[in-house]
Amino acid sequence: MRLYVNIDHVATIREARKTDEPDPVQAAAAAERAGADGITVHLREDRRHIQDADVTALARSVRTVLNLELGAHTDIVRFATRLKPFQATLVPEKRQEITTEGGLALRTGDRRLRGAIAQLRDAGIRVSLFIDPSLKTIDVARALGVPAIELHTGKYANASKRRASNELRPNKALNELRKAAAHAKSIGLAVHAGHGLTYQNVQPVAAIPEIEELNIGHSIVSNAVFWGMEEAVRRMVQLLKP
Image (cartoon, rainbow, N blue to C red; front, side, top):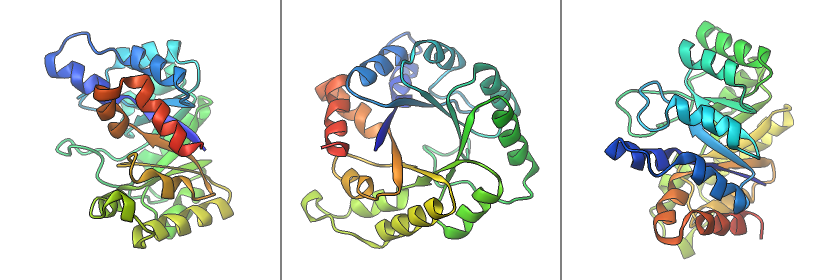
């Protein structure tokens, strides 16, 4: 199981004051020292947290791998093809949303998405699609020719909030993730997952054998306020790799 640490909200804190700290590059280095297998950042069209300069600096400094989340916006896709991160994960974006609310609504005839996939692939970038755990959507992702998908775990995360951490048991949302992961793996897709995962709810998802990578950010950054970044990442690594 790989842990990619999303450091977007380190930049969120910085942008609250439009200053130069905390530095996402330093956060990424701390995460790597603590055992992160990769660093994830989302360069949003509205640049609400991570900025172009952050991504450029991270591409130079990250020692593991960089996973760039992005919408299929022409300028950002072009930026990614120049920068050449190891992986680009295409996600949906809405200006008014607080955070990503769901997976991509995939259609094989979506010229904009197909064009973005082709540009990224031609630049030698591994492409993943952030989607809901729907078997039909997974089939469309396969038809679009990507090697990997990331399953949106928000429904599961929301369901887990309604239970005490010591009472968390398999539920409908978790079973949907299991079925989706098994189906995706069976048709040749690499399976990643993320969104809303915390120290309290992550282990049942990490136990799904077909899932090989988790992207976790908000919970780690939130707890880094109390524990420090390295310790926050280290504790998550221990949950995933006991």
